[in-house]
Length: 206
Image (cartoon, rainbow, N blue to C red; front, side):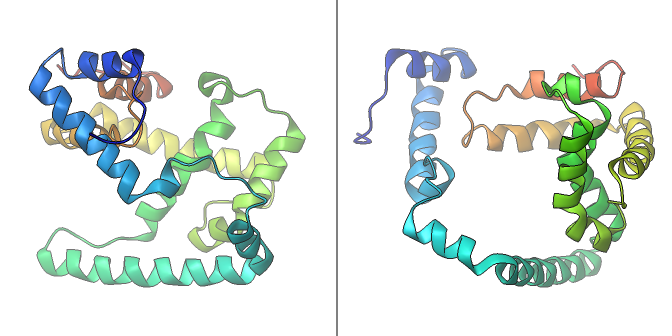
């Protein structure tokens, strides 16, 4: 049907996620391969020596700044629409929290996510993110300063998780359900519980 090889173990993983419901499994498999067909670059093994990727690398920072500007315009338009809808815009706080999701856990709980850091690696990571981080007022001059700031953000997020409304779990599980089509190894319940574990608190959703 999909002109792609599907082994028994892969099908079993789909079945387990769908609790062995055959019709749901068929739908998930169909959606998964449709995603692979529509967005192949998300699933391909990217060879950095491919001509197209070399062209992007050769463009250097000019391309990065152009990308940042494009994203900034999109965020600005989305923010205005959100404000008009009465649900609030996209603020610096939201962007800082988003970047924290990329680098915060690497700096404050590296062992919990399977990393073995050293000062040189942390400084390199901080330098890599500093361009965008300075714009958002998150990354600082050194990894130690950035870690201190990430700890403050982490404490705020912990308070939010402690007092999460019931709608939070519905939205989080719906988002994780959607991400499953890009990563079929994702277990939404385990992922949510692991998020709470990183904060050192119990996940109380049912």
